[in-house]
Amino acid sequence: MGARDELLAALAAAVQAVAVAHPVRVAVDGAPAAGKTTLADELAAVLRGQGRDVIRATIDDFLVPRARRYPRGEYSAEGCYFDAHDRTALTRVLLDPLGPGGDRRFRPAVYDHATDTVLAPPVTTAPAGAVLVFDGVFLLRPELLDRWDLRIFVSTDLERTVARAVVRERAVASRADVERRWRERYIPAQRLYFARADPAGHADVVVANDDPQRPVWLVRYPG
Image: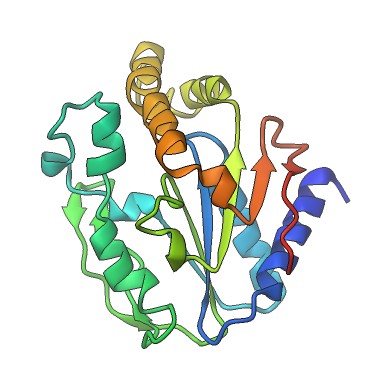
């Protein structure tokens, strides 16, 4: 078993160790291009293989529509942190229904990034033993921190995320455009987040993902 498989097995065991009377809400937080989406997809697959019902969702489906997303400017780091996501909708339609006292009737999205349109998918009822695996930026900010039952923070050197983003975005944006967005908006927004919220300090598990083939588990979940 390789290092990545071992990490995924350990993360799945941490999820299975969470004992709550409602669906387990797992945050997979990290900077853009840190590798959090891939890790969340792989963790969801492992959990499904173990027989768990998995709800897979992402912060990208809770963006504010583009016309209202940039009141401070398209490259504003403060705008990225404060204005980009509809956290009220996230808690109302997904996190609170799956949490303590919730009715488990949820919607996994309110926004379609590809078409920049508001969504209202049908309400679904989650089994009590389901797992929500949710990836995104800024998930361990104070407004959301107590909505998670397991908090995973994917840590990557921020300079590495620029190089990854250039490769990832090359079909849709030039290198110059990607580098500007990362260096002026995304990276400063992450530094603002680190200063205000200390996400690694509030995580149950920190995964060092500078080398995705050899991720390192930095914090042992006590469960």
